[in-house]
Image (cartoon, rainbow, N blue to C red; front, side, top):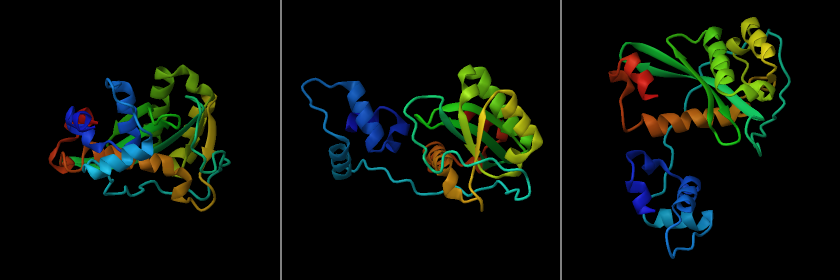
Amino acid sequence: MKEIAAEDEYNDTYGRIRMYQALILKKPENVDIPGERTVYRVMKEIGLNHCPKRKPNGITKSDREAQKSDDLLKRNFYADKPLTKAVTDITEIKAKDGKLYVSAIFDCFDGGVLGLAMDTNMKATLCQQTVHNAVMAYPDIKRVIIHFDRGTQYTSELYRATVKKYGIIQSMNGAGGRCHDNARCESMWARMKEELLYNRYNSEEMPINELKVLI
């Protein structure tokens, strides 16, 4: 486990699940790979346990008057195969010359990024571009359930027409816009910022173009 952690500067973010997966992939000779609970215990003993330190703040503003979609996931973000359930949201990152808004669609199956778009504004066109990019990369996404919050970008006619065009099934946070209804997406943003930025780079000292390349 220490060798795995030392292989790459970003491997210090490995928790028990990814460390266990890395051990399985390594298949070290004459070593029986223990279960995840034992991996966690040993990581803690040798000082490799990883605990996220920060949580992202939500930036999308709820549109309480717009037409809503049903909450089809109801906080059940488990998927036993790819391209069946996905979550989407926008996060904000401060840069030297302004703010960068990152929009992504994450597959609930493995957290993979299906679609990504970045811009200096958080208009509905940013979310629309994210869908376009996802469809180009994964044509089978056309039948996936995509869950999002009640932000004005997602309730806009432009966004609804886009997902309808591709046959994507819409799912939306429950009444009241509770953040836990899209907790999977919030946790992905927290992981990205913790592993890519915090204690590694100061985004506020980087120009937006450089920050885009890093992301």
